[in-house]
Length: 487
Image (cartoon, rainbow, N blue to C red; front, side, top):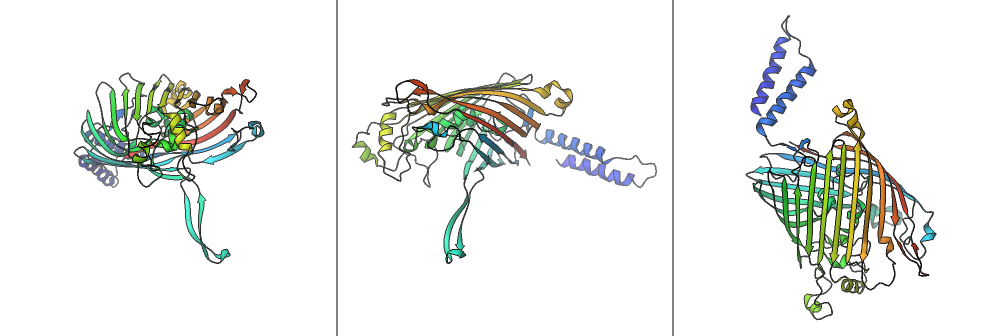
């Protein structure tokens, strides 16, 4: 760094001195700026030879992401991602739209403007393999609440909420890298089960909103306090193995399966039961990523509603509520094409007894008191083509314009016990979508998408099979960003 700055300083002094000479060579501001940028690139190459890497999917040179195994001494990283979206839906958002008379809401429609996710990332490398990272997420604009004195009501104190939303510490971890093969990480971190959790930045999927199937049935973005062993090999293998607290079956429900069981409604995370998660990625073929991930852990005794002694003396003494999730996801980028896909399947043991237990919980508990399925699944695939890759001028500017399509199928009540009818047919659906993604620069995308949700058929009250609920068309637009900057 010092050597480069000395070179720039000498050039600047030379230019100033030359300006006093009659026959001096004129140096333009553009020439000087180009020289400074060249020196800066040389500094980066000399001081940080591994600062730039090759993207596992695209093969393009890029900044090293926040979960890269090698950090650089004294590096401060700031960045994040965010989404600004708007949509119009030609279906109802009334909570009774899946009830006994869905035809009542057939002509309803509504619109939304939103900030689904705005995330700030900060990281620092202390040297000697030690680093720290934090990530704070503001969902739907965060919250605005305050206690105010109301003059119109005799000076009474009143609590007001002016805006809904959530603020969460999504990540906070400390990491020790022994070498590229062995890294230990402890703290709040993302559980990379499924394609969406591992690649949830909005520039990593085509849709305006996150992929609906995975987002519905498992936590997203799934983050827990965990201990992780991870690493990579020169041949393109990356691996993670995690030890973490189990999910909480009290909060499982019919619409979202085990999704609400992550995190905690309390000031601490219950850890009466434990779980393990793992992920393996292969990126040894240029442009291709193949990934397997999974999760397994009990969930039933992660509760404050009854003591272990009370449960042991009841009909639930042998209930474990073991959640098992397996997923395969992939991505390919090359020749102007981008294709991504995921298949995820989950199983919950003792689902009928957990349903019975949750429904019996007292009013005001954290449980939704709903049926929960023994099995759920989500599958999706998307493909897009960059038409700007056909134009050399646009390609040279690193701009991209994708026309894409996507198909999803998911069902949060794929299998469930002791139900005589298909009253939860609305929990399963097909979804087709098509749209555009325009990247004026690699870190920013403008998106537009039309999607159509096709709900499953079921058994009507008269015993016949057919459509039970209204389909769900939607038009959405958005502008998103994602980036990391090293200082």
